[in-house]
Length: 316
Image 1 (cartoon, rainbow, N blue to C red):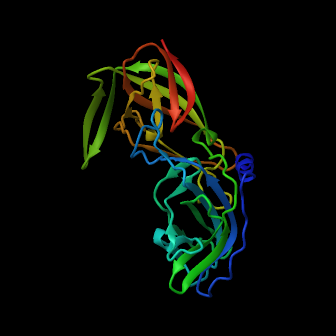
Image 2: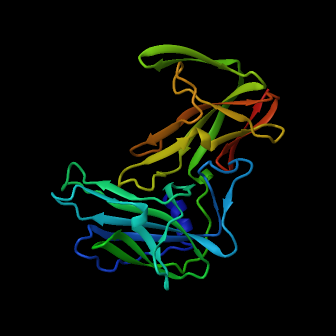
């Protein structure tokens, strides 16, 4: 993680000091990094196709500015929780009459979500022996010539204002393929999936088989390159995957239709399924299996993680 972030940070990183906060604000800036990007891929899944027609955001008049800010929190016996909505986190450029809200956020490195984030943290159970920090991982779309701004957090008499140096060079985005390593381990034709679902205290059997085309099962190992959770506290290591972030492209160059995965041998197949990975010292490898519908033609198939091709495997 540190090698990747340090290499990118060298292209445009600013560490800043906060303006003294009003007495009521529980936040104190601990550190800030600023990155500037030409374009970003929309990873919401609402537009385009990750593997084959990604929806790319950005234009000639603006740049995306990713601000990662870390705050210490003045926890006390009276302060158990802090919460700031996306509308409470704004960026003011010189001459602005009101603050600009973020257009997106990074919950996980390499995965851009086009909706603004918030801040929400609770006091640790073992306070005061333990503490917890708060984070902003917001992305703003700003005029290319913007060089200074003020980050404002809170409302009324609970406002922290932080000066932000935007005069950083455009740099490369952390792409999805940098966050995980993937090794395809198997690709085979599948006849059907059987399952048993628990519906209102009743076990109901089910089956899924292709009525057109051929169902394929791809197996692969996934290993995090580093902790991708942007809100992880010190010492925490976490990474995250969604079924819908993966695509399989056939020998003809056409993507196959995803039909899901099973979390157990008799579990209901689900197209939308998530995997959360945590570890202490060394990233943990997980083995995953996904099902797709395609022609079933022999040849080389490509596995995509969002817009990045991460592996190839041959179907006999």
